[in-house]
Image (cartoon, rainbow, N blue to C red; front, side, top):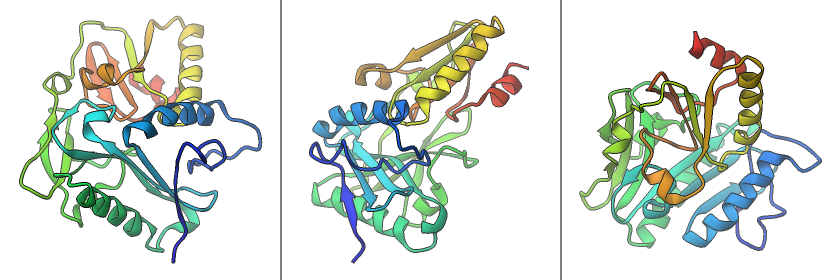
Length: 247
């Protein structure tokens, strides 16, 4: 039997958090994630991982408590399903997703939903894999993002009205972020430094409450970028990608 571990208040400080980051010393992004998770686990958030120091995990939460501008009743929201490197092709993604589906049914949920896009995005879980299990698009935005859902009872969630607006008054570079992803902390630091050095007006907005997340003016997983009043992407940006966007 495959050894999987669910994060709990008791093991959160010692378990590897399954992203690509590898370091023997404490990493600011990983520690920020631990702090964020400590509160989320109390709300029914599930982080299940293979018992290895690798990238093999699934992460989901009750939709009502999920930090995304998606509305619906009695659903689970699937944030992440990742299997990378030497662990691919061994059926781990199948085991993890089937665990989540079984968990949803055992808890009497109406279904599971996740963020997708008409064209697969680099920072989104593999939607083609999810569609093999019956996930289908149930809502969409003008920019091509989709809400995928696996319904058990014929009901469906939807994006919040404000999330579909995808516009804001400010013309400045605006980045919304939270600390769910271990890569966010240093990404914000590097982009903020670049903007300061190049006198680029930028607003970095930390989404630090559920209410803020539920009322964002765009789709959001843990990161969202606006420029010149228009929503651009949920993909994390490095300096090169930011330079391309600003041009």
